[in-house]
Image 1 (cartoon, rainbow, N blue to C red):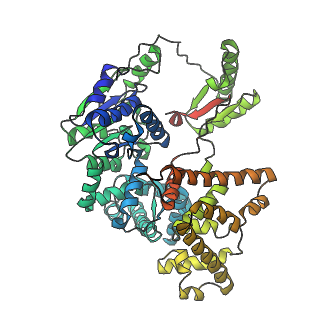
Image 2 (image 1 turned 90 degrees about the vertical axis):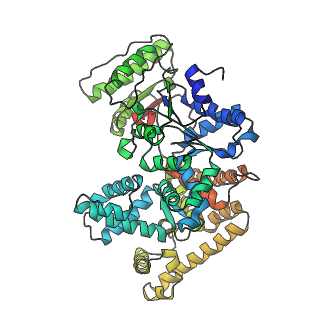
Length: 565
């Protein structure tokens, strides 16, 4: 505690009621959260398994876990929940799936899966302009879910005919997700909230499980996330939330900085502690930041300060056009590198939109300046990993239509689009998944004999592999899967060079090793995972983050302002 300033110390030690920590940028909020977890365990006596610390990114959750492990005995933190909101929601759904009407091994639809289903539904609703409207429909449904608005309420409160049409699509979309034993990203928060509203026993169980809650970046919570926290902390109000309305940048995806003010209404005894000392920036930068922020509409007033030196002057450079601007950036990097002996990795270029990165890339290439774009291609967005994950999704949930359609012809099994279209029409009429429809006698009257035979052979192989996955050591079964389908040979046929094919196969083995590590890490503990849990967690990781590479190479960092946050 001796390394904390007085305000930080106050925030850590206060446990007499609900607490809001207003933490300005660079004010040491992560230290406060991790130290508070340690204080709750070591001084208040709350077991680690009854504490939940929730944040928005996997990276932040990992950093928090690592910091806690450095200051608290590992035995005392057993069962401690440090996760993202969506991981917490996933854990609740996994444990309570029967109350929600789901089977074990449910799938999580990513944005592409959801978009494919919505496109199909919109075409069926005779929306000729489905392609033009698709993104708007997807965003509208997402915003309704984040605001806890179901299809019926969305329809009754529709502002116009367009919203009524979207609400009808929303209704069918929800029905099909359920039929496919699938949830989408927004459901990971919405379903637990709905369950808690309708099942007091389940809510009471989770309140007993989580006796103290800490939430980071509270200004970025939406209505649904706020309600999840409110219901879990209940009358006990044993929580600490950390936030800063001046750092709210996600209003476009439903974040409500007003949630900070709402806390005072819902919890009148709320104590507020302000962290205003900045450890990251010079005084000049903070003075400028305070001047800019002063124009913001404020929920709470605060003024950042630092005991660092005044620092270099902030310069505004005017350029005649974008080309001149990127030219100035490139030459300035080379000039500072030469004069101050800096490395390329010491430079970062921030910009508002990705379109600006393309201009920068061209100029940096022209000057032979190495660079790295933060948020490059995700590991999980590689085609071979998408194939592998779809196979795994299908094995734990054969009703996952999106996974079925991706792999039914990878590698090629001579199942044509006409055959799949016939099967889709039949399955849709029966309101069952594609896989389930293959077992129906009626399918024989809708799908050609040759096509149905090939589909059923594939389904038989999936069934047999699924049975082995659950009865044997799963990792060798997964490895054998790729041998069975001759995936390496297929990669060699569909890659530019043998080396590229080998790299892609190595990505597959990296994925399999990750699954093995996940299974082994929790063995014999409360965190032990089954193969279905491990695959579901990987699916969520796929959706939440890009593969984070520890890139220590000497490169200029290019990133958007949002990515830098």
